Image 1 (cartoon, rainbow, N blue to C red):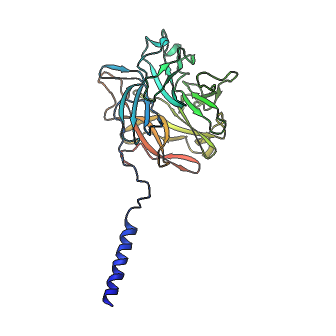
Image 2: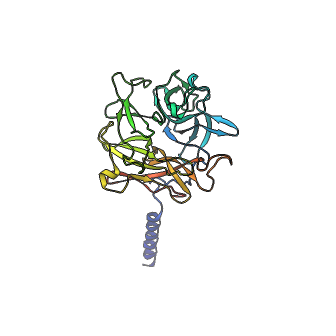
Image 3: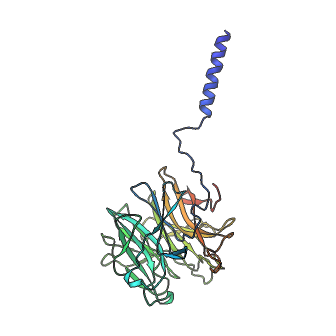
Length: 345
């Protein structure tokens, strides 16, 4: 009788231990700390390549006394990154004398990769026009080679921050960009993605606040994803940098790639459409990418300024050292929710 009780106790203990142990089948919760890349790495755009690495591309910076036209970094897990040099080591022939190469976005097109970016043409300044540009490479690490001419030029900061999107519902290739003090725009691309489709015209989507001086006075940095039949447009505004830096990420959604897009504010009655704003030591978070990891989790990748080190060099303007952070996106009632900027989730 005693041996039977001992056996029952042993079985109960074994069941308790088994039920208390972590489920090996459950995906492990990633452990990381922000920033995931502690260096000036503005306007990050992330893709996942067939080699199972994530590649992040960023705006031009100066490191160790040398200009890097388009930065590229690589990671196997989204949380540990290594610089991989300059994705655009040779400047376009039409922009050899300038130093402004901004906001790259890369897409895979069969055996090649296409990079869209912003650049200042020779003989110009910000008031007299920036251009959308295209470069191609056989590798996600580059080097990318410019196609020889800009895609589109125009006044001021209108033609900036391109983001290419393939619509899974129609197969069409689209380019979102903008916008200075205008609305974010979208236009269809040709099948080879190297020019705008004949007969297509830019369509205006989300504008800045029509009330002068009210947030956001400018919108930019668009990123589009499709989820459950909705197209979500993430975008940023106002000032990314400087003494008045007040960047934040907002969101709108539509049933169509070309809108009309309804902002979070319009759809829910909230006071604003912001889903990511300053918190703790991190200010001016924005210009994001959205990426889904191998476990099906959605992440927002973005830059922010660390108030403990707001400059790369002493001579730089304040709030210009923008480092790369990452946080989880969770979905509630059909809208993305971000808990960051975080130190440790």
